[in-house]
Amino acid sequence: MAGAATRERDLDNPSYQAYQVLRLGFTVAPILAGVDKFLHLLVDWTIYLPPFVNEISGGNGAALMMIVGIIEIVAGLGVFIKPRLFAYIVSAWLVVIIANLLLIPGYFDVALRDLGLAIGAFALARLSSVFDT
Image (cartoon, rainbow, N blue to C red; front, side, top):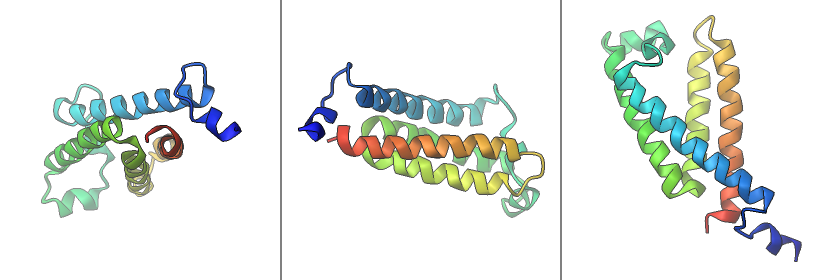
């Protein structure tokens, strides 16, 4: 019986509340970050690229970050539509971002923040196995 109670999509259910908050956050944040890859209102995103990645991309880190922006927008929309799948994708994407940040001295604090986000996305994926049916 206890398992059935946790599946209730009721706003009084703390697990469902957590699921909805995480789903909203991991829908909105990637979309906003993705859009900003084009607008540069928050930051010049190319500073988060290690120099060798910029060289591999032909010295056009801005174009690479636009591709990243498109991926992030799609990921955010995916979390909204099918969180059970896309929350795992976002969590893995954040792990890739963390690996990238660890290659740049001075961005370890951002990598740590993104670790928290990756864990949150994983938690959303697990909650989605209950509520995204």
